[in-house]
Amino acid sequence: MSEEKKEEKGLREEARDLFKLFFEKSKDIQKATSQTIKELTDKTFKGMQPSKEKVKEITEGILEGIQDVRKDVGGRFESVVRTLQELTGKATASVREVITGVLEGVEEVSEKEKREECLRYIKERRSITFFDPNREVPDEVLIEILNTAALAPSGYNIQPWEVIVVKSKDKKRKLKDICYGQQKAEDASANIVVIANLNAAEEHVDRVLDSWVELGYIQRKDRNTLREQILSGWKSPEKRKRKAIRDSAFFAMSVMIIARYFGLETHPMEGFDEAKLKKFLGIGKDKLVPLIIAIGYKHPEKELLPRAYRFKFEEFGKII
Ligand SMILES: Cc1cc2nc3c(=O)[nH]c(=O)nc-3n(C[C@H](O)[C@H](O)[C@H](O)COP(=O)(O)O)c2cc1C
Image (cartoon, rainbow, N blue to C red; front, side, top):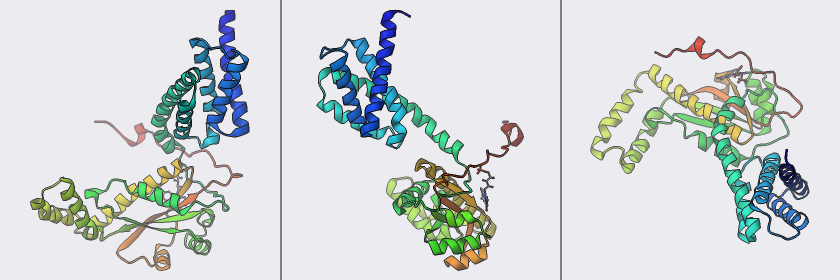
């Protein structure tokens, strides 16, 4: 390796380590970035404008540092980009050059991660048996999860799901008994009782059709014909049950994936006495409870066993 290369490598590492050192003290990406640039400019270049190659090295070093510390800033890049953008506004030309480079790097990594994120939420979801009984999920987070999950698809957009969130300590204790003593129902921050409404078509069809007319999906003159068509799909008790449960299951799966985005864990449960549960929560006979989702934070001291066997495509599918 030539002397020049060695020196360049050293500068990148120096920038990274300095950044991490400053970040350790302030926990502030903006501050740590500007301190790193200042320190390197003052010490290494003694106030002189660094060459393009040196700027690139500093840029890469800071970017590496950001990637290393980002779990400390909530693991998300949006805030990093925002703080760097704020810093650019105040910076001198050479500093701006470094920041622009860091921003480009952050955006590149962020794009890649966004693509991988969705898969990660699916791959990392597990049914968590041990919840931390001392950590609460704020109502606003639960509501955001549920509103986002409500973007799940449903036949004719009927959205036959409802939920009751059991969160108070005494109600969770009672729910645990109804779940045949499953401790997670009591330890989780909340339990989302997913309800499939067997009368959803009749109750929701008009609101759905109004929206379709407003948005131009259909013409007003076709509204009644479509209404009949939708309701006929819900005629028999068997069809009602299938549709309501199927769509509610899409909703439930969405809840479990979206929960991961918020750093939360879930556990779906079918082990409960449905008759007792319906009585406890005042759920009518025209509604079913396909499952309950316990939601909260994993207990910090408990480890989960590895994921059990999953059938492979060759075993469960074929392409024809
Ligand atoms: C609809 C449904 C109901 C379930 N009910 C229970 C339950 O009552 N108690 C329980 O311990 N696990 C329950 N599970 C969790 C499964 O055992 C678990 O998903 C499966 O073993 C795979 O593990 P994983 O989710 O960690 O990949 C349920 C899962 C589903 C999808």
